[in-house]
Length: 203
Image 1 (cartoon, rainbow, N blue to C red):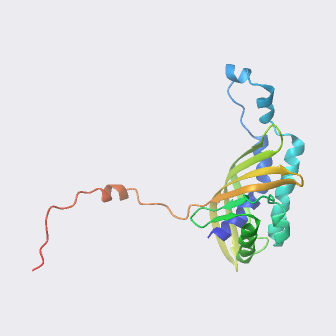
Image 2 (cartoon, rainbow, N blue to C red):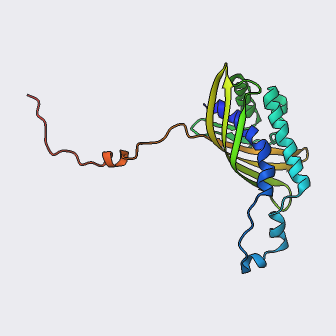
């Protein structure tokens, strides 16, 4: 399951960062807001040049996925021993470039090029005042196919980004997908029903 989701997650991010930075809602006009420092105000407005740089990196990741080019994919991740990709459940944690590379190598076996469609109905994102760190988050509906079989699912996706000497890179990529509906509404009530005092005796 995770292999399907990871491929979509970062593809979703391709258009996520820009829309998140440009659509941050203005805060209420309060005394506290009036007294905000210039630094705080600057942190809330993404530098258009930085946004374009991040957009370019995310687009490169998307293209690398469609091309199944592992070297190009890895070029979008930070050269840091703590770089991490996370999924939903236990075991879906890949720390370090080698583990992430192995995960993507497996992902390439699990989808067909050109079949991915995504629609993110909620997005957000931003960068810090220094222009060295960024983040993004979204909830997205997605579909793809393998051997003519279509798959549909909903993802929550988030990422942390760092600006290194070679440009912007993922330092963390996380995607979460609920695979079940949870217990039925009356499950708790049923579990808490008192046990019968009647004792059965085998004869």
